[in-house]
Image 1 (tube, helix red, strand yellow):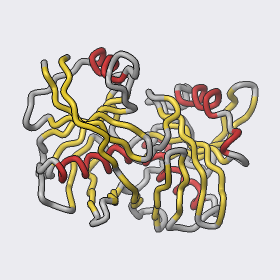
Image 2 (cartoon, one colour):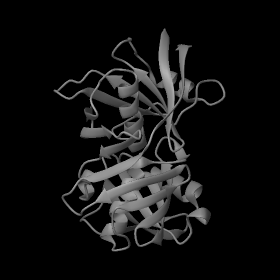
Image 3 (spheres, helix red, strand yellow):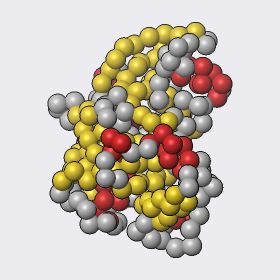
Image 4 (cartoon, rainbow, N blue to C red):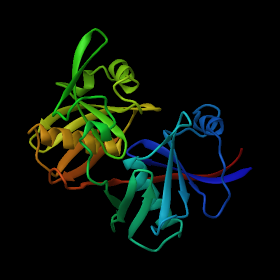
Length: 275
């Protein structure tokens, strides 16, 4: 099976994007894992499929992690998705409605090729994260690696835990991230963010993503980190989020409001692979 694909990235969070409208694409979890291998395959953090819409939107957006598992949301991927469908001539719209398993997204491609994504209203109730907890709190705590860790929890269409740290550069992202990502508190696992407040409207962030490990950038993680920081009274928005791969701008006007994420998306190359 020959598949045409594009390699893209959003601040170093890299993707293989496949047009599944004009070609037939059926991939198993094992095939996705093989494609994700950076030595024997193409290499990526997530695989994005562009599919026909089912319920009146412009497209359907399907996301797979490097380990072959399907997930419902990826903010950096959404920006790449928007640039892909416009530059490949799949739409002439600048505002694009996209179906995901987490609900509908609205993606806007700006003139300077920056993309703004309406990431939807964050879900704070533990049952909607999902998180095993009796009631909603600003912060929760759990014992991992012989210490007690405090974290905020919310869903941005995918589950996030956000830890406030004094220095993101020295945070134990690999050890603590791995321990929390698959902790029993998170029935669907979680993305673990390590957030350092750097100013009244800025923060630095590293994210250990479920199914991928630490990535250079995580768009939904940046949204979650800003929501957590605003709720704790630590920042105002719009907030500049500095990730390892670059910066995003996140705007959230408080509970009940959607989170707006703006940032770049970049084409790397087009290719064809025989599966």
